[in-house]
Length: 119
Image (cartoon, rainbow, N blue to C red; front, side, top):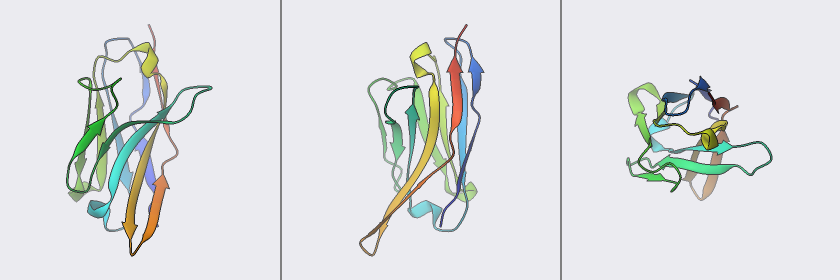
């Protein structure tokens, strides 16, 4: 069992920056593929960025060049650095952990952290 706790959300002006953190409990963090999703009011949850257990990153087109995902396996933490924030980035951001082990898929979600971009 893995528990994920996000932090770092808040209110920021357009063009500003925030860094989200997600700390994972439990062991074997380095074996998990990690990701950040966001969900705006009335919309579906969408993938923002992902980082594999091997450190390969992937970004949605809407955040490419502005957001950076990284991980620190020694701290069981994944980060999302968000630069040049736009109003359309406003959403609840969720941390996600997933891995396949002996043909079983394990998927965990955090509780979410609100990011509001507004002047």
